[in-house]
Length: 382
Image (cartoon, rainbow, N blue to C red; front, side, top):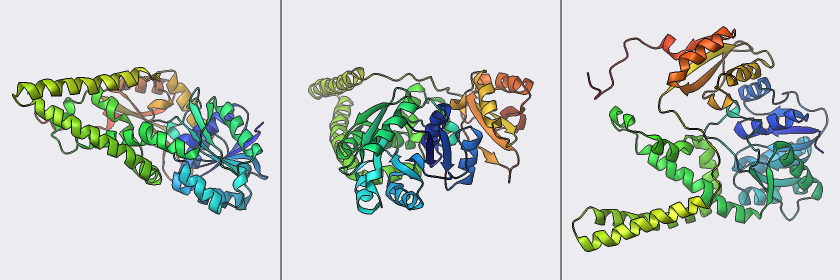
């Protein structure tokens, strides 16, 4: 049983692990190169920024894939924990580096919880992020039973579903199911850049659904793709072949030759039907709709422990839970006040601002600071 835990890296995943463990009574120690990130996670109730006085039962390395081996080596020399795991979405490369460089590779087991959000940072964290989600473990040929068992205990604390895979098989799979889709979403989203403001009016729910994951932090995703480059390149090569065939079919549909049009129509229908069939075989996770129009509500709080968690609990009662916090905590120097930004549907912003103000919070609604001489929308009537 895990009684003490260290989380190295207090972003979305690391803070979510810490929140889940803390709720189960585990003593959690938070470490991050960013003092602001640690402070935010601590204010959320994810644990303490104080270093442990003795080795903890398990350390979770919530760092980019390319940093896993170096951070593991550093923390093992320091004596941070009895066992170690990570949460990176690439496994084979880090495993090779760990076996080659870590002082005690037997104390490490690779891990990857298949959970995430389009937002990053500790404010996006949720204690139930891993509930009923697959959590892959990739033990190496040297992983000890105590290290493996402690990682299993962590998955249980977080409500995940443990699955054991070989690291190479894991990377081949996620190249198709995670890494390539992120790149494709980014390609489509980037095509919108530079278009006229009127184009934004025609961005519907389909575009938002297809490109939502493109909001992921660019440097982290570059690290992920680089670490799994060979597998991702294989998927992109296959997609390139499919896209070439698709382009030919669509081009044929634009000409008047009835023979080519009929063949291309059949090919296009076949492609769309294969996609539908593949998706219907998957259980779709529940997700709420994204609002086409959003607004900001800012709340200023003090840096007292528990204050941020109290605000988020209050906001949750008004339908604006932690999943609608869009911007990071902004410290105004030292231990001064913090500004928390909620991004919510525009039609609900004024009501949320009024309710939070009535509950005693220091609220600034977006409309309160907006320039009243905003330019008219280009192309809009009137």
